[in-house]
Length: 379
Image (cartoon, rainbow, N blue to C red; front, side, top):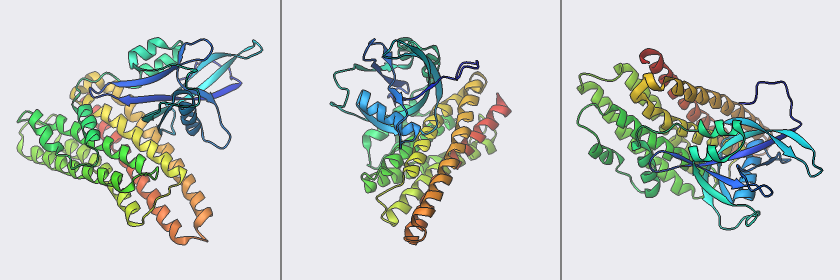
């Protein structure tokens, strides 16, 4: 998203876009004030030796804003700004921006007292920052939702934690008696978000059993929703799309949560409690893929009006799947060199986990392909 000119900034920086999804489906982002001018910015800084760019962005988010979360290794865009040096010299800096799904916000952090922090809605945040390209990144992060059904389900599922969630019954009370395909798709997307969030937390090595249970419960609810969709395909005379398209979309969505559950099962079976950074990076891709899917699915209600946005979302799904392949290959190579000879069993287990994570991301690419097919056929 850089400017279409030939300038090559000497200063290359990274930044985090800290976000959370509210109960009504809207996104909020956390902005901080700069220390000198007190203007609103996002956490940013220089690359850190020994850390990948997205990890450095997450570090800056903690030090400057007191938050931790799940960073996506694939940047969502980049912007440029004029950085003033201490000697008064002004140089242009290029900043890559990485989405950061916020998990925790702390009362104390390294730059506490030096900056203000505040959660903004996307329009408010875009108006608050000065850089035009950063405004565009924030505005395009998530389109306003036409329905809050999916996101209310996400918040409700998170509040319930690892409990058995009667999601299907809850949705049934909200649905009309005919033509529930859209609502069921959105309900299923909620299970993907819940499962992806739990999987990323699991791969931090914290409460493996609890997060595995959350994924398992989400997978059971997804199975129930899938069965309901297939029953409606058979019993309803008029469907919004071709029956094969409906079964294809719900099928690949269900495959995604099934594969998350398979990953968690393997981790529990082999009693794995420590995870490679590349595994955690792949989970960051999965969280981003689930977020994108949860935005895309409600847009199917009006394909013609939303075709451009759906194209952008599915294009990013395909792009981050390719990035996940690169992370998978790097992680597998490092695993081979580190454990293949001395710890062959650990290598075999690690390879299986990497394979499962890759399959999760592949299923989200399948979701993108199914949605693209719907747009081509019906928009």
